[in-house]
Image 1 (cartoon, rainbow, N blue to C red):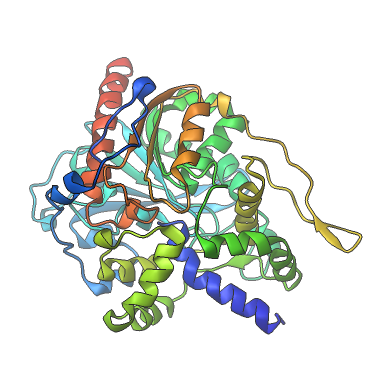
Image 2: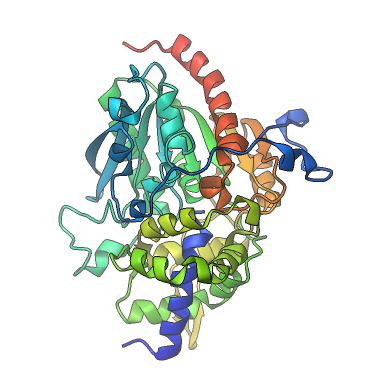
Length: 441
């Protein structure tokens, strides 16, 4: 049994972590860095806003939103080298039910999207058609594939191990997601489409796992056209949220206690969460939920839609391993993008030995970085540090709203204009070059 203080600490994290890792008009600086100097916010405030969200509260309970909004969806199951079974979703284009003319999809190279910590492929579709990146890419003719990492609600499966009975199922961090899940998913997309290469888009943890793969298996550079790195969480040691910093400070004893109690799965998706969120985050209590969001992700009231937050929390958290969160705490505490260091007990003290660094110079594909000035999880200086270290930096885009936060990348009212429209422009230029060099059969 866990002690009461430990349970209370975990409860705080249950409420807070959904905001942590969910979740442009662009400028460039010489070497294609953006300036991070803005005057006042007048230009941002005067920008035309995206249209209102056309979403229903029921979306918090649906597992396949794409079909509801008139898009074709395929589900593929992919087996990793070490036996995990991952759900991979493909958006095949619009149906007549979408209210728009059906399109012949796949005029472009395929694009694979990878989600953030404690999240799932829902990252890319929650905001609905006309806003969410998954739909916008499908509308532009891309063959869109949405990955789900091991341990999430859609990939809580293994050929031998039972996640509810076997602790061995949860013996992974984001290192294994990068080393095994990402290459298996990429290979499946290429085999299914017959394409020689694909675009890669990642948000937060979805970026770092690709750097893990390319550091360990650099031959995968040849299978990728470019990487769109949205708030890349390679360096996070400048993060500002008090709740997250408290977790990082307590991580070692908390992880040791949970591990000893056999609790190796963290924040799985449960049916009661969406109704609970609807109750706790109702309009009358929305201040509490907003304040938690602001502490963890950053404060930007103008971009927060209360209904959208409730829908998001119906899909988030989607589950992770205890080791995953512990690995995050290690790179935050040490300021090193390094492999996982298991805890060891020496003289009644918990210790972890320094782990080898990942080699970012092996990621030779073009990398485009997107960051916000008010991101409490991935501070803009952390994003720029990564940008300075990758060998083939293609561009760096600072979001024009200087209050843009970590959760805004997938939840903001104006994210379609501030982020997704720019990302589509970037993809288009790489797509033209890729298709001319490797025409699809």
